[in-house]
Image (cartoon, rainbow, N blue to C red; front, top):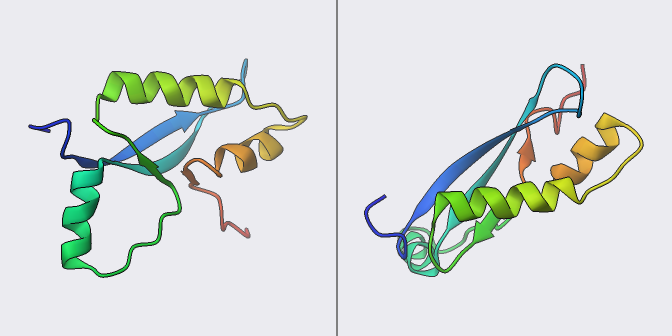
Length: 98
């Protein structure tokens, strides 16, 4: 990333139940307004699910913000907590039916 004010990157988060082995992947796109504008020049429509918009993309700040946001979530089971995290990033098991 050359310009933090003009960036659009896929971010993968690996989160798991506290005190247990294993983690699951959640993905979201982090994008600045200028990069979004550029994307819209190529595609007239974009769906905004699992996107995070920032004025400037500084990975450490984004990671800290997301960590704080996820740490504030509560649920009685890992599955229910993962569903809440999936509102932020796409959960690898979101549409899993097996």
